[in-house]
Image 1 (cartoon, rainbow, N blue to C red):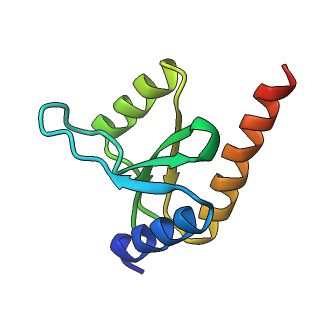
Image 2 (cartoon, rainbow, N blue to C red):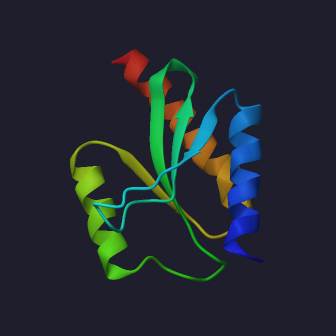
Image 3 (cartoon, one colour):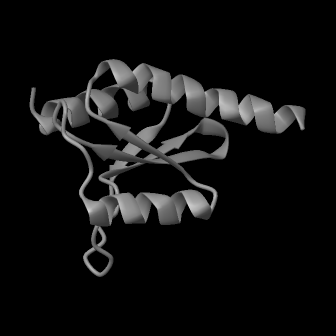
Length: 100
């Protein structure tokens, strides 16, 4: 399966969840994740998409650590089956925030 196919499934599932999955391009800051996922209630996450079994490059992993240190959620998805779990986890994080 191609990375592009997984990316298309992500955009469709995010749209069904009421959000958008914006293609994220940062020419002056290489290694940033592929998509910015924006869901209702201000939920935001970065998503790095990979072909099945592929891992992020070292620069990408460095950017992921930076984003996480700033408090952002960063997901690496290499199988379409991971998309639903990512969306569930994001929505659950919002419920957790509301309880505190």
